Amino acid sequence: MSEWDDQPKQIAAITLFVENLAETKQFYIEIFNLPVYYEDENSAVFSFGLSLINLLQIDSAHELIAPAPVATFESGSRVQFTIAVDDVDATCEELIRRGVKLLNGPMDRSWGIRTASFKDPGGHIWEIAH
Figure 1 (cartoon, helix red, strand yellow):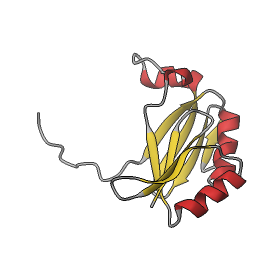
Figure 2 (cartoon, rainbow, N blue to C red; figure 1 turned 60 degrees about the horizontal axis):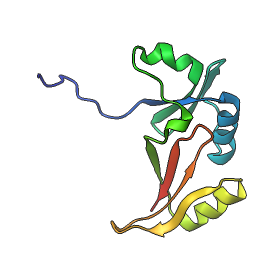
Figure 3 (cartoon, rainbow, N blue to C red; figure 1 turned 45 degrees about the vertical axis):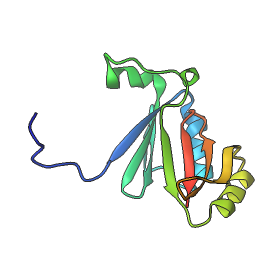
Figure 4 (spheres, rainbow, N blue to C red; figure 1 turned 90 degrees about the vertical axis):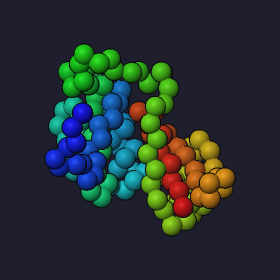
C-alpha cells in the first residue's frame, strides 16, 4: 500500500440519507439557525464552518453508493456528530426551547467533558460538548 501524495486535510462534505428531506431541512434551519447553502429537489446542503452537511433524500442514495446497501432509519444509529459549545447547559436550554427532545444529558463524562445528545428527524445523533 502506498502513501497518498496529498493527504486529506479536512472533511469537505458529509452526506446524510434522510427519509423526509423537507422535515429534516426545516429542522436544520430552525435548530442550528443555518441558511441553506445549496438545494435541489433531492438534497439540501448546510455549511458547518469548513464542512458541508448534505441531506440527501434516501431514494437518491442508492445510485450514489451502489452496490453498497442503504441502511434504513429503523436499523439504528451508526454515526454521531459533535459540536463544541461554550456552555452545554445553556445550549440545551435553547435546544429544548426550539423543540428538541434530548436523548441524554447534560452530563459530565468520565473523560472530562460535559455533553448532551439529540437526534435529527433522519435519525442522526448530534452531541454538544464542552
